Amino acid sequence: MDFDALRRHPDLEAPGLVAADAADRLILDEAAAALAEAGALPGPVVVVDDAYGALALGAVDAGAHGVRAHQDPITGERALAGNADRLGVPEGERPRSLPLGPELVDGARVVLMRLPRALDRLDEVAELIRAHAAPDVRVFAGGRVKHMSLAMNEVLGRRFGRVDVTHARQKSRVLVAAEPRLEPAPAPPWPRQARDDALDLVVVAHGGVFAGTSVDVGTRFLLGVLADAVPDAASAVDLACGSGVVATWLARERPGITVHASDRSAAAAASARLTAAANGVGDRVRVARADGLEHLPDASERLVVLNPPFHSDAAVHTGIAAHLFAEAARVLEPGGELWCVWNSHLRYRPLLERLVGPTRQIARNPRFTVTASAR
Image (cartoon, rainbow, N blue to C red; front, side):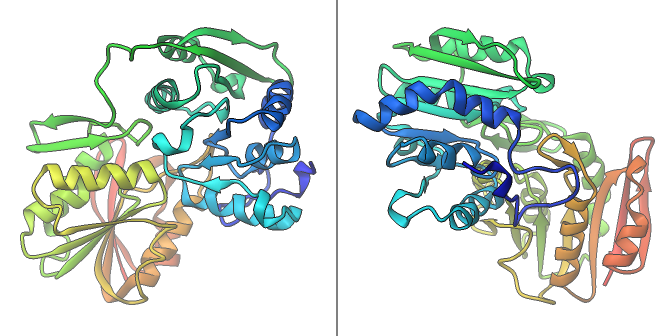
């Protein structure tokens, strides 16, 4: 397969950001024999957390049929479809995208996956495979060595009787798990929840959602001043909503409004719905898995709230924030405001001024800055 033909689009594309790397190639090489067997025997090949389709399309190229795939970001799912077009994969042979659930891994004999940065995400996926894949399933989970830890072996070891480690190649390595245990590990099921006493909120989260069931310090700082944000707005938007803490807080503090929450992550969108429901405001928090605010029309909202991520996979890049700022600007009506919290060292104010409009500082502490940008 021509890995160089793959693109990240519609995700961020920039120098140094690639659609496939050495870890993808190593996973496919280590799984080559298993993929050949899967092509001749019943039982599906499943791909989890493939970034832009390299693993899923590589499995198809190796002869696997009926490949199922799950990518948490909607942009990754769309990149997989675009790359299948680019490579000319026939319609009937293309990987089928499914939610992360029992149907995805049911009866799987081979699972290819990129190791997630969050151990909780790995634990949730590993338990799903343990419970629903075939008894002879083999899991090929790889990543860049600098992002791997021994704790990943331990997480897989709680769900599988055997975990082997391959030799490193081009600073990448693969963990191969087999022999799924008959009983689940003694741990709370996913999703999990916790009460934040200071905010009097229940936070519900799937594995891998930013901050999990806790409230990160930036969001907590933002909530401390958010009561003053466009107080007469009839609705509000929680952009890049994560577990839905901001959306739920707004809906609770402003009983008359509807909050539109969105995140490109399937796990985040599911968690936000659960968090809103757990706090009794599920009827007024409308959650979408979306790339930015693509589901909302231009000039339709008076208040957008944002705690922007600044990672694209493992890379720090300001292009992610710029995309979200531009989306907020598009959706804000004239005179509407974007309230944003950001790590002060990132110095987003000139970017906010350029993409949204006049920006004033609302609050600042040694780590974070909260600004309001008027459209």
